[in-house]
Image (cartoon, rainbow, N blue to C red; front, side, top):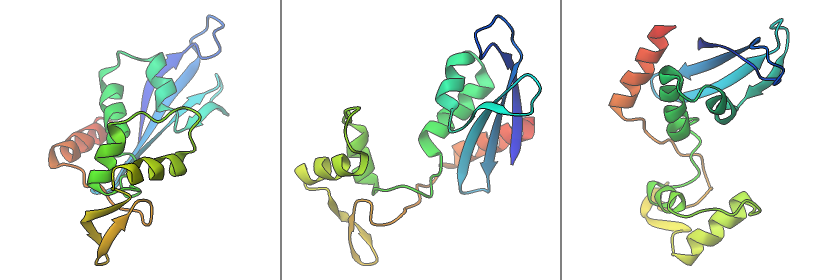
Length: 155
């Protein structure tokens, strides 16, 4: 695990930049994850922690190092927990899920409409892969792996 600090922000909107932002990056060469912490002024408790990189992005939108991590996080966070085949994931990224839609049910309904609920082009254990029936691993491209490793070296 690599922990990176991104300075202090005025998280409480009280005119004081005293809340430290830290981001933890984990990468074992194949699996990537990242999480954030926004600490209180004593660094004894977090105001926000976990999968809060969207929130952090709003507070430090122009930080180049954070933006690299953010982009990788958006595309590869927990890349060993992918619910769909490449074709299923590509299709789902091309449509917009309504805010009030039930996550898994909605995805299945949309895939069924285009005959992708069971992806005939992607076999898993010798059978066409049914969306959400296993956790698949999305490979991280070599150039992104190099970028992650360079981020870890910065710390």
